[in-house]
Amino acid sequence: MKTAFITGATAGIGESCAHLFAKNGFRIVLNGRNPEKLKALTDVLVEKYNVPIIPVCFDVRDREAVRTAIEGLPAEVRGVDVLVNNAGLVLGVDKEHEGDLEEWDIVLDTNIKGLLNVTRLLVPYMVERGTGHIINIGSIAGDAAYAGGSVYCASKAAVKALTDGLRIDLVDTPLRVTNIKPGLVETNFSITRFHGDKAAADKVYQGIRPLTGDDVAEVVYWTATAPSHIQIAEVLLLPTHQATAGVVYRKG
Ligand code: 8X3
Image (cartoon, rainbow, N blue to C red):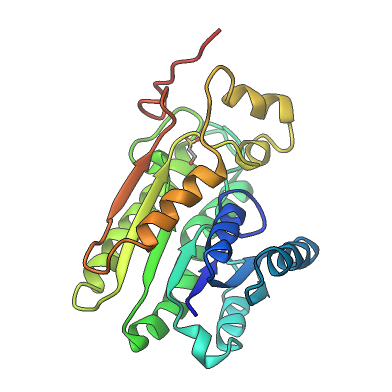
């Protein structure tokens, strides 16, 4: 049985990935920060797909918690087949010279150092086993900065560099490394960005049919299940009426 380790799996793209991989018979190492949400999703996945689900509750920013969780996995599970580094967020739409440094610490520590914590501590087991696929959830925001997104865009540019760097470092192994870069995806992403203001979040997706978490999960799964000689290095995934982060055609 194959294993997928998914971070930030209790909502949005991560949750969709958990459903899709479980539906296709993967055992899931399911990570989230909130124990209640993690338990609830674990129960749903076990009930729905009848596959083993291993919940691991930690914040990817907490390096020791990441280490304890990974070292606590059964040895046969630890060299996972697929790692989806999905945990990430954005807070605020402030200008770089005006925003909240504490919020930016959370964004940078989660999106960059959190991803690095999981990669650094888990990937050696994949290398040892001689198989595996690391899929990082980047963003179109990593391709170019946009207004109100300076720090988030920087974090996703870092995800691109970390993905490319890892692909270089693993070139002499059978492991594959992918960066999935979605554009507008309607999840709780914008609600978090606007600190719970649903009306402000809704405006982001007004007049356009955005992607869903399930749409992104389909692409993640496609890259993970491509024949083993094919490495899909990057996918830029946009709604039909989005051309760049800033060029969006909205009806009405
Ligand atoms: C999400 C895409 O354009 O809202 O990463 O930053 S965007």
